[in-house]
Image (cartoon, rainbow, N blue to C red; front, side, top):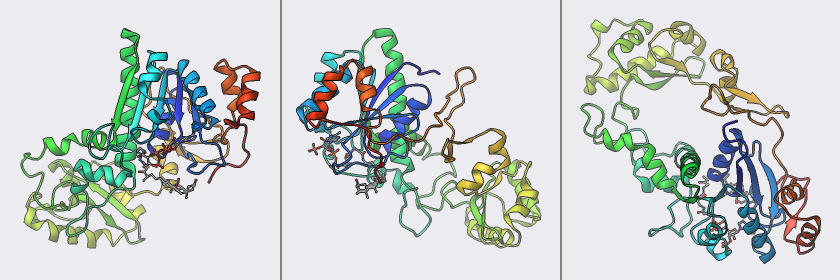
Length: 385
Ligand SMILES: C[C@H](CCC[C@H](C)C(=O)SCCNC(=O)CCNC(=O)[C@H](O)C(C)(C)COP(=O)(O)OP(=O)(O)OC[C@H]1O[C@@H](n2cnc3c(N)ncnc32)[C@H](O)[C@@H]1OP(=O)(O)O)[C@H]1CC[C@H]2[C@@H]3[C@H](O)C[C@@H]4C[C@H](O)CC[C@]4(C)[C@H]3C[C@H](O)[C@]12C
């Protein structure tokens, strides 16, 4: 696979860093997740652990921190998910680790970045989304702004952008032979991927002053979801006049008898009209009308239904692991060196401690000493909840 042979150390953290590690793992990297010892507070279950192995290491003990330094000496990438200053307090800051391994790519995935007023503040997805400006554009008219789960800052602007940074730094290292520090701030990551919002503000007809009254933010009747008679929903994205015409036809309406598509003042009434029509048929009935047309109307599927939908099945877009757990396959699909995601169950904390330390050059005696010093933990049969 494209990232085969790459050695990645992912310090266990919440949501964003585990996704970054999983992306690298799916495309072939050997990702070791460095977990807190299972009895310690703050250990979280990593539900994005596909293909990873687990090494349980107490970084608060000097022997544990020294062991991580040694591991980083032989690693290509380190992903750290902590607030600014934590790694420095552990004696594991970039200056130390890059001095010992100048090829190391030291990825620092945080909410607010390594500098700035909030650099040492706690936060979660919704906070980063708020500070980026993007949250102000999300939500329906006369309602509060809302964060779409923790997808935008944690995962899109965090895990994915950080993985992109790692790959870019690896590409550069192939030329220079040198690693570097990646300051991946989720505030900036989500703002960056939302550049369209800033760059399109002056585009005619796209944005109104008020949230929830614009073309793409639930203002337009042809870019909206509608409930069907069986309590499900259809997603309409009929923006271009050609596609809008097919949408109107599928609803059984005559466009000559309707206001112009872009008559913004008529949008609320149009939305009510469309809603009353969609409520007359089941989701399956609307699919039989709109499937294989260019009306841009697609059923809103549950996670289970998405995995079993004909289109997604034809592409094997979702995969099952050995435990029968369904999840999305890695994306994008590379034609010659596609990702081959592991089908194994997720690792237990410390399951691979000894195997990994041996692989990174520790002797059995050194491993025994780390264990007697309580700096490491071997296989723990109960996964952390
Ligand atoms: C599933 C829920 C999460 C959903 C995603 C959520 C919406 C997010 O947005 S996640 C993104 C969070 N932000 C970031 O990742 C940005 C960067 N990180 C931070 O800003 C901070 O890490 C923090 C704010 C996220 C957390 O701050 P905290 O003070 O806890 O940690 P840090 O300051 O970073 O310092 C880390 C300290 O830990 C020490 N450490 C680290 N590794 C080791 C090690 N191997 N050995 C020893 N010590 C280690 C390190 O030295 C630092 O120490 P110091 O501070 O002394 O320097 C989940 C959200 C909440 C979860 C639940 C909750 O946690 C309670 C239960 C916990 C239990 O263990 C599991 C069940 C829970 C119910 C748990 C369940 C889920 O996981 C959550 C609901």
